[in-house]
Length: 272
Image 1: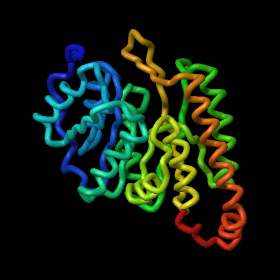
Image 2: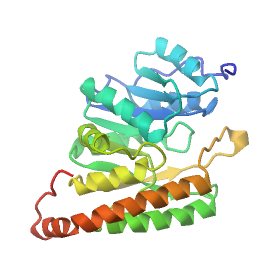
Image 3: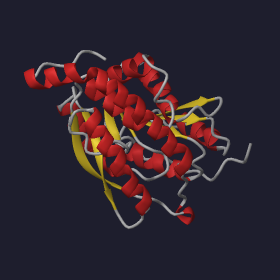
């Protein structure tokens, strides 16, 4: 195992009393030193913050555990091996549900997501606890054009699969979920454990009648010299997304009569 990367020496104090219902949940895999800054920024905005280290071999698990030992608002879980983003999120959600939390804001550990908007997203969730609060990405010049264009395809399929439920972006992982509903969805099938998590989560929650509320949020693609780390692989992950949408479309066709009836009669969909 590599040596522990340089870490933030001190985390800022929590902004008032810790929330007993809403927490920040951050999966992390070999993010390098950037994870410490991301955690510090999240802690400056919210308490508590939970990090699930998904089998990292870069030494950050040890560094984060050292930070958590000095900060009661930070909790760190370490998985023995890499299982994928969705699996790491599910581990955190199950722990959060057992601890009595009702909602979790998920965000990436690599610095792409706007920690400054944590409070406003949490407030939106507290005002509408029955909904999922979804980030609608606002791209700057750092965004790879291929990825910006490619996500339009996934978003188009998502609009079809949800019968136009109003999901503005299916891939942006900065969002607040109702924990119990998402855990039930994930425990009922074996998918959603890797990069397919973000999209399939919103589709299946929409099928359950969880309404999306979209809020603008900037996304930043950091360069390597800025500490940016990406585990996205165009071939592998696009194949995974294609397989995911193929499955979802088949399920959507089977559900279509009932979903259309629910839409027309304004009744909640069955708990699928």
